[in-house]
Image 1: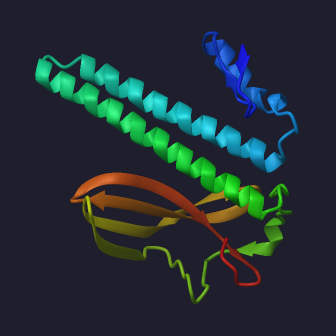
Image 2 (image 1 turned 45 degrees about the vertical axis):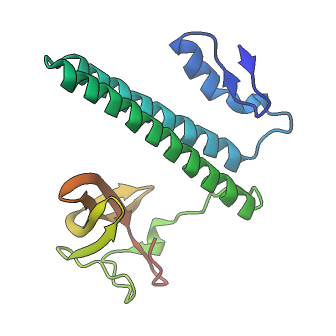
Length: 193
């Protein structure tokens, strides 16, 4: 295997080598990266792998198309989406590295005591009553963006803390482009996590 100066391995081996290399990539740094840097790198790797997985899935679908023009168009779109995803991964990585600098390289490892948290979320600046729905619209260069945020009648337990599930969907000109589940809880001091 070859190594780049930033500590990330340039791989010349197969898929097993990729997995092994990514799990030990932090060993390559001359100074020894901080926990924040290490986790940021691993998140970037996960982002890259997700983008690559989406690309190969799109290729598989495209290559099964009988219409040659449609197939070529789908392959081109898959390549464009992969490039956009890689760019987004890079932007997220840079933002996280900047945050590491802001944290003075300290690891973010808060002490979580489930007794410190409660539901429902009633913070006057960010209330989350079950069943409520907020809709936001904004024109963008790509088209009209519509964001629908809905507080579901469902919870999830994370680190012993019961959190409210909020679905966040983004539409661009009527097409769903993002669908996430976000988890919120209120600390006994009133702050929302």
